Amino acid sequence: MDVSNPMSCVVPSAHGPVLAVLARTTTPLTGRRVAELAQPRVSQPRVARILRELTAAGLVERTPAGSSSLFVLNREHLAAGAVEILATLRQQLWARIAEHARTWSHRPLAVVVYGSAARGDGNIDSDIDLLVVRPMDVDDDDPTWQQDLSDLASHVARWAGNPCEILDRSEDGLATMAANGERLLTGIRRDGRALVGSLQTVPFPFEVA
Image (cartoon, rainbow, N blue to C red):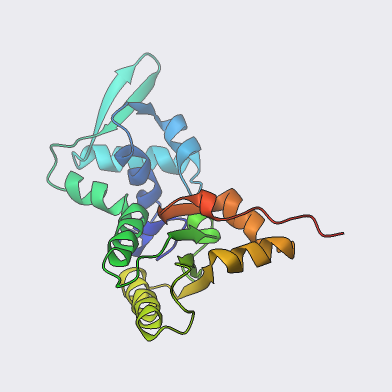
């Protein structure tokens, strides 16, 4: 899955980013605004052509507005539901990860996605990076814990098509990382998204002289 444009795994053309913009709102938008919001970027002339095609197909409704036009996804169209599902693939992945963690014998204190997947600026080759915070009463070599981590990594790869890299740390382990001034923690706190627990579980690193 292209973590910056998940819809591209099914809609590889520039139609994907345009449809993703329209699927995220019920507010009619000008073609210029659609082009501004599209990720990855699509030129305004190309957006205009795509909107004409989608309007002709009935998937998008066009309303004249002075010298401009406003466009909105026609949610009564048979294909609209599929478009809305495709536009939320990243959120669906986060939900599946959280649901998987809820089945573990030892519930993690937190599961945080970080890096390019969290920022949404990677590509089809990007890893899905997860920090999993282990309860203090669970040893790092606990076989059940290790099996759950392995199962999660395997499932994420199946769900998204991307390798999953898991950073397994206890709260004490995170505290040690912070004391050593490890900058990775800064990135996790800045860009991370807590799927289980709270981002506050991750400490900021101390400045190391």
